[in-house]
Image (cartoon, rainbow, N blue to C red; front, side):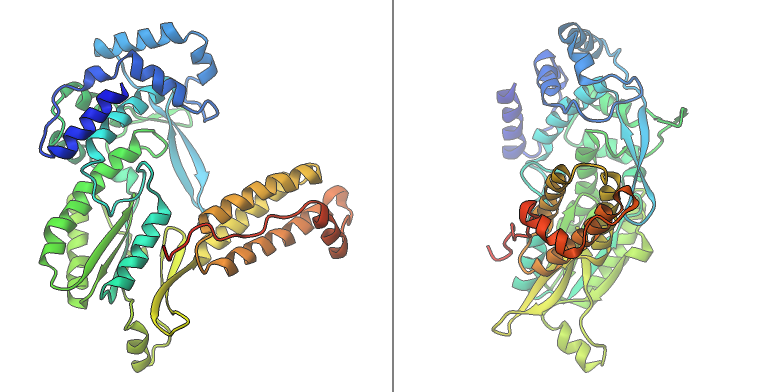
Length: 432
C-alpha cells in the first residue's frame, strides 16, 4: 500500500496537471487495517461510544463489513459529537468527535488526499503538514523580514475559518485534481454528516468540523486555492517591491516593501475572502510598519518604539544585534503567557491532592512541553518568568492542603533539592 501511495505522490509531483480518476479502490482492507493500527485508542469517543479496543475485539469482521459497505456505496458517516473546549480568551471552541469507524475511513481518506496535494502545496504553507511545524513557520517569517527590504506587515485573522468553509467551492477545488466520483462523494458525505449537539441534530451547510481527522487537509486545500495560489499568481507577480506570505492553517502573515502595495493587498484580501464565504476579523486585522527602518521612522514622528505583531503564540519585535545591526526577535506573547499561566494554575489545583513526588514529576512534564514550544533563541526570560510563576502557584497549592500551611519558602527550596523543578532550555535556534 505504501508503494501505491508513493507512486501517486510521485505522479502528482512530476505531472502537476494530472487528474486522478480512479483512487477509491485504494481504500481497501489493507489500508483500513493500517489506519486502525495507527489510531490512538485514548482519544474521545463519538456518539456510539465505540472505543478502539471494542472495535478491535471483532476486527476482521468489522473491517470486512466496512469494506463491503464502502464498495456498495452503503457507507454513511455518523454525525460528529460536538464538544466544547475552553479558549484562552474565555470563549469555548467547538470540536467535532467522529465515531471510531468514521475515524478509520477519514484517516484513509486523509492519506490519499495528502499524497495528491502535498507536492502541490507551496513551501510557505506550514500547518497540518508532515514533518513541518510552527517553528519552521516563525523562522521563515523572521528570515524574510531580515533578509529582504520588508517595511510593512499585514497581520490578518479569518473569522471562524473552519466553520465557514464553503462546501460548493471546496468541491470545485477538489475537482481540479480529482475526478473520482466515489472519492468526491465520500468527502461530501463527511461535510454533510451533521453534528449532534446536546442531543440535537444540526445540519452542516458549511464548514468542516475541527477535530475530524480529514478536516486539516481539507482546510489546507481551501487555503491553498483561496489565498496561497492567489498570492503567488496575482499579488507577488504584480508587486514591484519585496513581499512574502507565510501560512499556518488559517493563520497568516504577509510582508511588503511598499506601503501602497500593502494597502492595496489588504483591500483586495477582504474581497478575496468574501468571495469564498470567509470574513476577516476586523478587530484582529491590521497593517503596521515593521522592519529595519521602522525605528527611525517612528522616532522622527515622535511615536516611540516600533509596533509588534503576534504569530503562533510569539510576539515579533524589532531589535538589534550586539553589533548594532537590525534583527527580528521573538518572545512568548503576553496573551499566550497569561493563558498558559491560567491553565497551569487550574491544573495544579485539580491535582493538589496528588503526592508531592508524583505531582512534581507530572509538573515537570508539562514544563518540558512548554519549553519545547517556546524555547526559541532570546526567549529565555519569558520561560524563566513562566517557571517562576509556576513555582509561586505550586507554593500556594501545597499550602492549601488540609487547609493548613505546609511549607515556608525555605522549606519549599529544601524540597526542590530533592524534587527538582525543570529548568528552561533553548530548543530551537533562530540562527541556523
